[in-house]
Image (cartoon, rainbow, N blue to C red; front, top):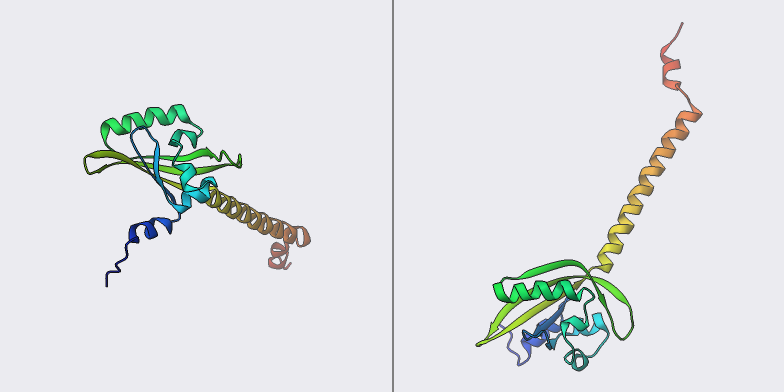
Length: 159
């Protein structure tokens, strides 16, 4: 059954994990979802006074990439980009996708940002736990050999 509400699209966007922005070709933010508010710790109204360049650290690289993207009309993704919150001064890493879209006869840019700090931390912890388990197993085997050196060979030689 199709659910009909007046604000269905907004409700869907506001419940996504990733930050979603809509901007014009000058990269002025026209729309930001609630994940964007959380990511940058700014209200929607404050975000909509900024450009995407106000939020991203690698402005020169992004300007070049976005210029090419708008000209070609193809989507583009950048991984492990650093962003800064102007209010808190905190930085974090994101995966960022840019998709040119047509809204009527007007060209816009759909921008998605997915925070990856949490995933990087989980992967790092997993690698540390794996290394710890390997070390533990190695030490256990070494301790056994110290306690019983060549013990199995002595059993086999019955003179």
